Length: 387
Image (cartoon, rainbow, N blue to C red; front, top):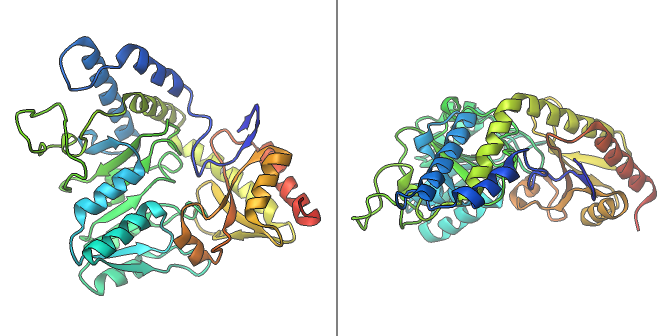
C-alpha cells in the first residue's frame, strides 16, 4: 500500500491501512454507543451491547464459527495463553511444530517449568519446517498426548500448515491453532477445520484495529478462565458464569475495537477472503520470482509447490538484514520488517538464526508496481551494497 510516506509491506506485523469503515465504526462507538455492555439497562448500555454482539456475529460469520463460542478479548496472545493454561496440567505432553511464534513458545516454556510439561517438536520438511499429518500423528501416537499446537501459517516464511489434515489424523487429541497469520488472508471455516480451538488477531488479516483478538471454540470444549471478574451477568454469584461467552470474557470489553473489527469483517465478507487471498498471493509470487533471479538473494522456507500466504522472507549475501530494511525505508520508502519476527524457533529450523531475515508482507491493497520497486531496490543493493 503506497501511503503519503512510502510503501507499506509489513502486513505480517499488522495491516495498514485498515479496512474502509473501521475508523468510522470506532468513532461512532466512542461518540454514540460508549456505554458498558451488559452493565445496566439504559440506552447507551443497550447501544454498546448491540455493537458488541454485531461485531461478534460478523466475526463468527466470516470464520464459520458459532457466535456463542466466538470469544473476543485483548488479542491472539491473550487467547493462546488462556487456552494453554485452561487446558494443560502437570506432566501433560504437547506436540507442536518447529515454526511456532513466541505467542505460543513463551507460555509453553513457562508451563514447562511450572508444570513439568513434555514438549515434543515435529521437525517438518527440511526446506520449510512444515510437518505432515503422518509425522504429527506418529508423534502423538508415541505416548499419551494432551494437546497439539500448530500455527496455521508461519509468520516468517508464509508456509501454510495442513491443520485440517493433522486434526483429522490425531483425533480425538485436541488441536489448538494459532491463526494470527491466516484469518482474513485465507478462507477459514472453523466448523470444517476439525480443530478444538482457533486463536487469531483482529489487526492483521482481518484488517481491524489493534487490541482485539478472537478465540473460536468447538462444541464441547471447555476451558478454565485465565481471568475472572465482572461480566454483567449472574452478579449475585462470586463465581464465574458457566456459559459462554461470559465465562471467558471477564471485564469491560474493548467496545471501540470490537465495533471496528465488526466493520472490517463486513468489508471482508463483501469483498470475499478468496479474492483477497488471490491478490496477496499473486503479489508474493511476483516478489518471489523477481527476488529469486537476483544473484546473492536467498528466499527462506518457501517451496514453490506448497501453499503460502502473502508473506516471504529473504536475505542478501554480505548485507545485514536489519541494515537492509533500514536502507529500504530510508532510501526507497519501502517498509518491511527485519530480524527474528518474534519466532526464534522458526528461524532455528530454517537456518536463519540468529541474524534473521528481511520479511515482506503483502496486503489487499498492495500493487504490482510496489512489488517491482521492492525487487528493483533489493537488486540494486545486492549488486552495489548499501551505505
